[in-house]
Image (tube, rainbow, N blue to C red; front, side, top):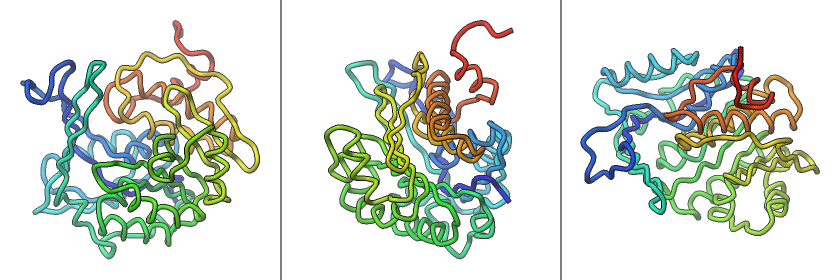
Length: 314
């Protein structure tokens, strides 16, 4: 039995070194990244048993992904390999203010896009303590939605991150698919922007959480607000981080996944919701301080962050 099982796509992440632009770049930094795999890798690095279900091409790029995720401690035994498929890509352009960070996807006809429901071994999903899914997979099209629906049917306990991407589907499409999932979820994660864009929820965050609780009555609901920190509704109470960690942002990509990983890790360790919120905030801050989608951190880093952050540790 795994503590956490995730299902989703991993892409090659090709980043344009700042302050260059795509049209001027002469080199690209190569990493891997995918929302669900990011969560599985971080939770594994913190010491729990995780597995990732997906599909990869049977070539050197697929080999690299498996080596990296396995190196983080993720069980990749249930990843399907395909001779004729390709890796999806995404290109990152790191803007210097006032330019934003821009993402360009090239993932059509990837190995994961071809993965059928009948090609997945669902036994790890049935046996997992917790199954984590995200709206990114559902947004890939009908094949992704079929996989998400089946995973929800098989899971005993569900975590769901809305993770809305405008490049994948419209707000109305996302809401139509996601809204029926929320009553099934034990944990729900959503950005404040996503709450406004997909569900039309604006105003004070406490009011947004109250509205979301009507759709997800069994869930702890985390509302992520970027630099303003998170708020989590658990039953009738709202929990905020006890203390905001200081962070120098090196790379914010993957911070939301890191937050989810920290929160789920703490809950799987049967910590209190307050401890889970504090842990999630620290893990997200640690991610922002490192380069790449997956933060190379461990339990000692989290303990140091909870103890007070920067300083000399001897």
